[in-house]
Structures are given as structure tokens and as C-alpha cells.
Length: 265
Length: 252
Image: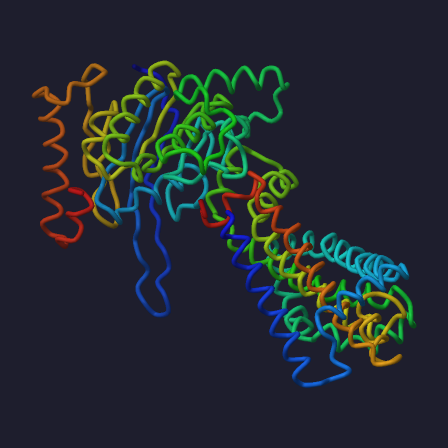
């Protein structure tokens, strides 16, 4: 794939001013990253390394201190409907039904088209029969499916995901990964996916970007050139997974043991 | 289900029985027995006073309360969202809020004379502050993820209020309506004792002043309790709509 980068991060840094008299805190330091159209990129790193903060800057919810973020050739000024963010959980509006939630971002479409789009994505995320249900009647996994369908409905070019499966149980998480892979192959969106789960990143991504502990910077980038759906027992998969574990593990020996629990839940 | 009705009914009958005994034992010729109260209610109905007074009280509460909702909810939404407006007005609200609506009675009479507008004004005041303050708090405590999700979809500011902030706050707003309607119902009785010549509050004070008719006093009190209960059940039924049920703890 030799297309121009759709997201290009140059020398990005973020520093929070310290509380009264304390030193300012470096959260992110000189991050460089390029993502091409249609690519599925996962960002992993120990908890507290600033992955979510990084994502918030790329999406325009937060402003960086130094460097620049170009998305589709222009500096990011704020949230944009062409790039939709999928939150960890509860981003689904509890006062709307499943179909009303999915239609939220396409309110300006003519209603006939709206219905068509909603039906299409309800089917794609496997929620047929639950169109009229309210989120409180759904399981956590189903709510996350609603959120993904809602993100896809306005046909964005990029989807940002911040640990979207973090609050789900193990089995549901596996199922959601498989489904997300299937949806991504069908929709061909660029996906930037933040997770602390290394296995998840190797199962999903074309490329895994490993961040260092704070101040977060790119420690390593690992290309995952394995066919999908991925065989989680294949030596190639295990090798790549262990490579990333190794990359993070080495840096963790310096840090506290507490952070290990974030990586080995 | 049957137990849910039988037990409270038994308690009610027991209370009436003890009440009756106590009045007989005390040989009071002023304090009414339950039966006399019942006759009092019948008498009020026959004279057409009960309906008239209930309607008068309900009318005042409705007008004052609806005005308070129409002003309190939008003002609360705006003050909750726009911080400078909140910082500017909150001290004034916090200063006025603890003043009992009853304390406003002299001013209400000064402005509106003995007229429906005086109790309406008092009801309005008594409901306005709880509704406004609860709405402000609801907006300030809104889950940021809802606002961010909506902004991500590129909604206009008006749509943000209409489609996200208002529905996100609605459960708490409804709870505040319940509380403030309860207060309004307390206040209307007090206001009618002083500022007007009709209504359930007037009935109570008039029955006492014009002939020590304590059977009618207690009859009026019971009607106030009964209607207050019905009002509460009405507002509470709003909490069952699917659009707001998520906002209350799951009770099966």
C-alpha cells in the first residue's frame, strides 16, 4: 500500500503544568506516526503512558503542546463527523432506542435513506430484533455493538476506538474482536484503536504501535502481516505477540510491579 | 398483591378505631370523631364547596407550578451549561433559595392584594428554586461522554441542548418536579389561609374561625393529604417512561 498518510503525527508532545510549584509533567514526548488510508493501527502501552491522551489529541478533544497532527492533510481543530470516536462504554444514549441511537449522526439524511442505513448496520453488528430496545435492556457487548453501528452510520473515513472492549467479559471480547475484523474488512475504514491488551492488538491490527511509559513516545512499531481471521495458535502470531510483550516487559522492569497487572489482567 | 392492600387497610381501620375511642374517652365536644369527619365531608360535597375549593387550590398550584417549570428548566439548563452565567447568578439564587415561600406572603399581598395571583406567585417561587437548582446540577453532572459523542457527530448547539443535554437531565428534572410539586402543595394551603377567600387552606382556617367546626377542619386536612398523594403518584408515573427509566436505580 503506497498511498499518502491519512493521519500524520509529527513530533507531538504534551506537557501538563505542574500543580503549585511542582514540576510540569511530560505526558507525551516527540511522537511521530503515519497512518495510511484503510489501515488498522493499534496503540498499546502500559497504563498511564498517555495512549488515551494521545488519541484525544488526534481526535481534537485535547490540544497538544508541541508538534502537529494532520488528518486528511489539515491540522486537527476539533471533533469532526468524518472521524467518529467509539468510547469505552456508555457512550450510547440511554434515552434513545437502538435504532434511534444508530440514526443519531445521520439526522440530516432523508428519513427513507436513514431507515435503510439503520437497517443495514443493525444487521451488520448483529442486533436484528433489538431495534426498539433501550440500552438498559441490552448486555454490555450489545451496547458496544450499538456504539459501533452508530459510529459507522454517518460513513466516516476514520474510526477512533478507545479500549472499546475493555469493560466486556473475556468471551464477549473475543467475539467482538472477530466481528470488528469482519466489519473492518467489509467497510474498509481507517481505524486507530487504543488498548492495553497486547493479545487484542495482535489479533486486530495491521500494525501495532508500542508506547513507552510516561512520557509516552513510540518505542516500537510491529507490522502484523498475518492473514485474517487470525490463527491464535500459529507460531507467527505467538512470535509477534511475544515480541511486543518483550518490548513492554523490558521497560517495565524499571517501573513498579503495579503496572504489570494492567498488562497481565 | 392482596397483602399489599389488606395490611395498610387494617392499620387505617385500627387508627380510626383508636382515634374514635380517644375522642370518646376525652369527652371532647370539639374534636371530631372519624364518623363526624365523614359527615363533614358529605356536608361539604352537598354544599358544592368541596369541589369548588379543590378546584381553586389545584388551579393555583397548576398555574404557579407550570410557570415555574417553564422558567426553571430552561434557566437551569442554560446556567448549568454556561459557566459565566452560573457564576454570576448562583450567589443570588443561593441567597433567595432558603427564604421560605411563606415569608413572601406579605410581599405577595402587597403586590397582588387578596387575589388568585398572590398564591400563584408563592407557588411559583416555591417551585422555581428547587427546579432550577436541580436542573443546574443535572447539567453540571452530565456524563461527559454523551456530550463528546454528540459533538463528534457535529450537532449544532441548539441540537446539543435538544437532543442530548435535555434528555440526559430529564430523569433528575422529573425528580425535582416531584419534590417541588410536593412543596407547592404544602405552600398553597398556607397561602390560602392568608391571601385569598377560597381553597382548601381557606376552608380549614375559615371552618375554625367561623364556629370552631373542627369536623370540617379535619375533613379539609384529609382532602389535602389525599390530593397530595394523587399529585405525587401522577408525577411519579412520569418516571416510568422508557426515555427516563435509565436514570433511576433498577427496582425490578
